[in-house]
Length: 409
Image (cartoon, rainbow, N blue to C red):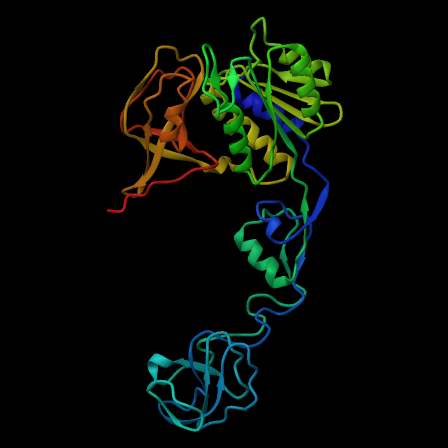
């Protein structure tokens, strides 16, 4: 059995970032990793741009009455030159007319009037005010975003402005998910004696989907070698195969042996954590990866957050979200009898009174998955620590699909 840190290091050393590139539509690039440098083909803004509704003026004129010579909405290019003693009516986003060197917002005038009438300017304004100059944001030929950047809404905006549609991105991995166990039935089916509904297959599917991926479900593998082998062989054609259940040491836990038979080298089988100790990770000789996680729902969810999510993001060259770890003040005490393992407790993490707080959720073991609906993250309890006091500082980690309640007081 190895430590969590050792397991993560093995995963990081094993999972190779993809070098394959997809060309995808601009919207499809969201949540992916950029595979090309973004060079601007234009100045942005491409002209001296008005940033306030008002009048384009010669700043040295000062307060007074001035003839309105043109009405310039956004999208229209000016045709008249503003000379001393005249102004042009302008709207936000419009090009600044020649001759003008400032824009006074309409609130500092007598209001808008029509072309040919006189506008009342009430205040003096400094040169350059309320204008965004040509190339102020980006110059033509500038390197705006480097290859390897993670594409968020801000990057989408820049890519659109630069005309990058489609976009070159590193390939996302294909992910197949297999739940195992004779006891599992579909969520739509009422369980019979000794049966339970398949929750793990669906929760892992949802966790994978939250990473902007479209996983493939292999359904439920029965506890016999032929059915498991067939489904695992199909899963082995994907970059990642995620198997829930069948990875511990029971007589009917066939999964590890079948994984070896189909070409996976299993690099570890147990990690010194709670929940999630019997987690398996392996790699095939053709560069595909497998994770086997325990069948208990909470164990499966925690293992995904700690090990599977970083591996998938390493593959796709996306940032690993360990930065979501935070220091929080514990709101309730915690005691445990066995402190031999590093433990991760479901918690509700909030921002209140200028600090993060963490409330440990009442939870009765790795099968108590209903407790997870009250949690948005986990709190780490280090090995050899058997007691956490109320108001003590703890380390928390938000889930991929986190929500963060905020104190509105």
